[in-house]
Length: 242
Image (cartoon, rainbow, N blue to C red; front, side, top):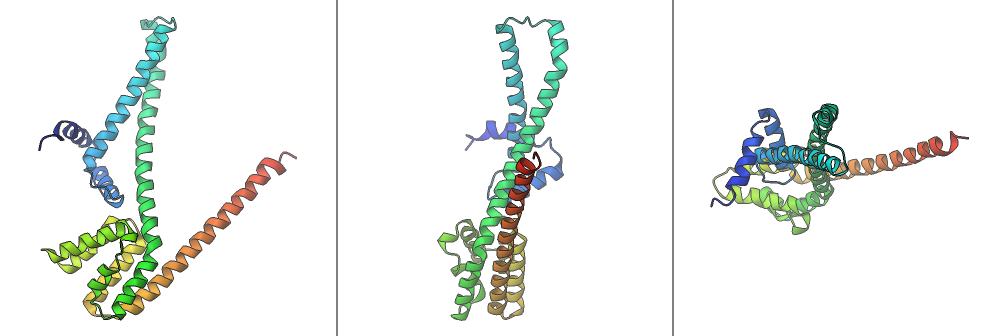
């Protein structure tokens, strides 16, 4: 049971140095990225890398200087120390930026994947509802294996609903696993529809059409932006010199 302790305890203690607001924010981001890792452990691991990498690079520079014939004297250190301190600080910040940006890309990629499959998922849910299935059963049955992580989260919610958690609470947890406003709106609408007994099939059909329309607009925007970028690049690189 104690195989993980040393490594994870050190990382957890280092991660506790960060402000509570940052720990909470990273915890949400990790949840949205599909990771079950403790936010303090993640931050502690990042801090270890951010401290050790600059340290070993500076140490390698000093070793190289001594091998190449430069004497590591007090005068040498006085001249080089400010530059080494700046290099250490820059590397420390860059490693943090890289790690946080990588986490952000994971969250974004996961959100984009779930938004791509939502229209097909909603269409399957509507088919199940029209076949006479109960709303929650229709929602769970539409979670096909090809929907990947979204399907896994739905089945986890269904397992919780079969246990001690209430149906609405376990159902609402699905949206906390993804950083997607579209998914949040669909889940909220579905939960309210289950409570009020609204015509869910009509609501879900219109939602699926709206999501497809949004995706078409995004694709059109991306294409036009790419075209304008190429056009501006052509002007700056080729036309302006002439």
